Length: 415
Image (cartoon, rainbow, N blue to C red; front, side, top):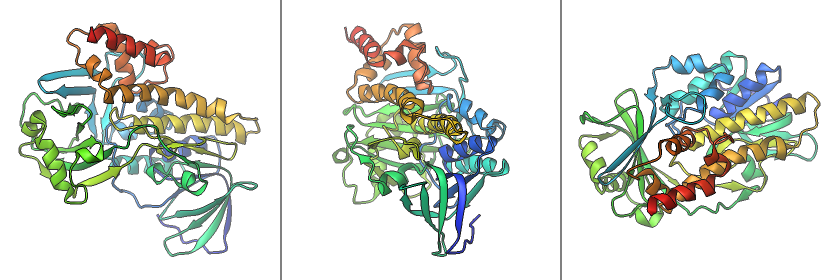
């Protein structure tokens, strides 16, 4: 719904949330349930396309916290129970039910347009106000947070809030307006992607798992294939820009050429049909100078985004929403909150665990471990927990000592 707001209008809320994606809708639901006055400002109209379709089982816990689990379970999304990896003639898979950490072992693969709208609609049903077509033009933090908002009619109005949550994803509204951007130390990579009618006839293809394929000649180039319940898939390739050819030309040609270079994927998608124009996401890794103060917090991709290889984006977004909401409820109830201790540090424990595995993927250490022919089953369960999203479980040695433990395994595999 688009609101028509008078230009001179000033509104007061407890929390202004920028963005109605998963982290925004989840945070709004959690705050509203505790009686907080929440206003969600979303620039686009839903449903709208978004990339990042493969959820991790850890997400289901946060969805349940927000009382949205029944709606998600009933939506008919593609069931997901694990992840499969292929490099040339090597194939291995992880069953997310066979993991070290307690918690859900299954989840869904979703077309984000429908999934994000479902979560936003559930938040609205719970009583959250979401305004679509609203653009945050400026933010003033000199005293209490003040947002200048413009609606689609070009009218501006002011929202006074006690706190701001930025759930704007790759829009990164507060990092841009408050000069919080900080270069990521990860190399610049590019993703080219599309949705396809996959027309897969191979009887061995497991639609219940995301398939990660490695380029046969360049192991730092990889592909995702995410099946949906309607006979479609999300397919994409990730590489450094110079490895992808002419990105200024036809992106469909780029994507199809790259698929043709991976024999297994080429065979699997021999009858596939592109649904949309292929899209490009460049230089997606991002970092910020600070994640939170006593006036704002950055959720999900608005703060730090690593890489899509292990589908950690939505998981980090939902975890950040849950952590931030808990801390913010305390602050709004009068408690003094140290946002570094209550939010940034706990969140980054999981982010840094994922970072260990992202870096090890691209330098091939983790690939050597994944494709090792005789894995220790207990170690595989511990790594499986991280791939299932449980990157905050400090009882898992591969979380609490992620770099040392992974290097130990890699050394054994390589020897």
